Image 1: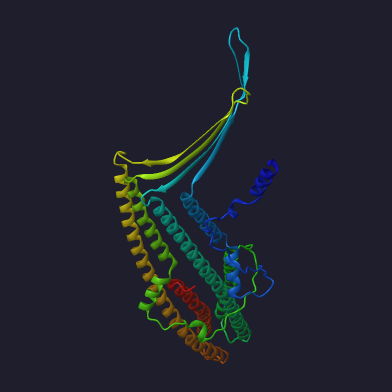
Image 2: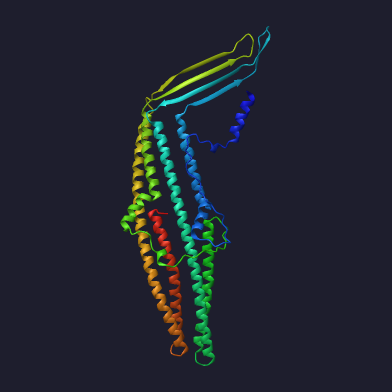
Length: 444
């Protein structure tokens, strides 16, 4: 018998506490299909998102919070089962009466008690429903954090590529200014250009070198931002695949109006669903508070054993079973105020839901407008670039022919540099705005 008890105790001690789930409350699964962050290979956006979801510490923290809330729900459901408690005591006592013999006694007693709440006018059920609502809210918050992580990786990915394009543009601009400086130096030696023209071209060229250095620094910092989101060293050097610069990638895959997008967001956004779950939990709190006015009925059972371990004093066993009714009569109006407090908190939760709805609709509207503006800006920038290329080509030819000043040439080159950078950044601005719009609608 002792061996069997030992084996049973060993099984329970070897089983992790969190592995026990008699109420089946652990339903949220950890991220699956995780991949190793092999930065030596070229990485695309889906792979980066996959790595980020598995490795992002803030997201992992939110997942653990969901698991803790699931455990809280299981703890609440345990109120439907009886509680059984065993107690025991053993002692040794010595007594001696004057003129008599010393008496040694070793009393031992054991007791097993059971208590089972049978009915409490809905307080237990409302508490369970409230904890389920809190769990739903926590799960939706985790989904919102998941969406935010995906959006942040999108933004960091496109920002990194955009800064890479800015660096290339700055390098191209530096080459153009270097070419102008060399041409001006040649003309100065031939007596066809003033010293001021040569110095102006040289100064502009040197400034373009500084722009390259600044662009390199910005690219490194954007790489560090992306690495942080993936929980990688900040000095990680990425090899990222480039998206195709076509119309399809900048277009959104829906023909909904902005009003329809708002309605869709009200159905999908996890932040709103979380607020609605919090509102529902606050509503259950009213029922919990009201139950304080009502009685509760419990079943009780008890079995006891007492033994003095003496041959002339036999052991004793006793047992009892019955029902107990607890009726609250007066607690200083505490329950009344608890009900009022719960009602006010429910009203506040309703207003919070309305506030979240308004915030979601505003976010969708702003994201839609930003996307439309980004698309228009990208289109115009491409037209400006073609014009700037032609202007710079004509200005350089004219300068070589002595028909135009160095100042006009440098101006044309500066406009070309700005146009080239404008196209590079506006393309990725469209993709970032598109990601923001999908996030605002709740379609991640």
